[in-house]
Image 1 (cartoon, one colour):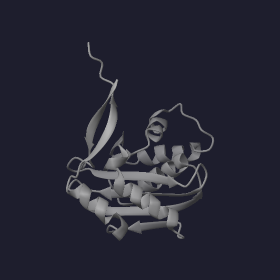
Image 2: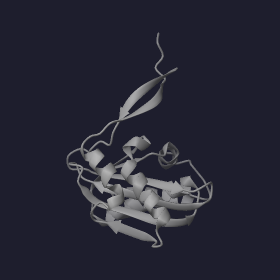
Image 3: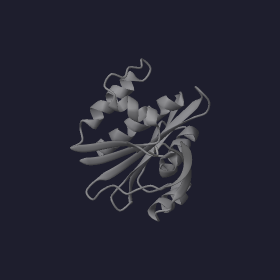
Length: 183
């Protein structure tokens, strides 16, 4: 096992699909929390974004709220084919494992699974945080909100730099473990 540098960037969804990126943010283990996300088309164009203040919650709960609220937004936009990306591998594993039980998040998890069933086609993927920068900014905006939930029909000023980088295909280097075994 050795370290390798991977080039990471936000990728556009396939033609005819929309992409939802979500994230959660928490100050401390059960501190002030927010969530947010973006919905973009196959050209990378902004369709909608959201941020929300959650109150006091863990990072995992904030991630779960971000996914739930993002799925509600996409359902309200009548999206049929949806690619979902989150930078929490624990969330992806919990979502894809029907045996997963957690008394704190199970109601949110059940909501997410139900919402996912509303889409004609859906894919859920983990992405590295370097490919989830816009959603991260939206989640951090949620930390500062007094309002419960805000929808943005164009990119807010705070997210413009990350959004432009995504549109331009900017890569970010990430050091990852190379688990390939040489024979």
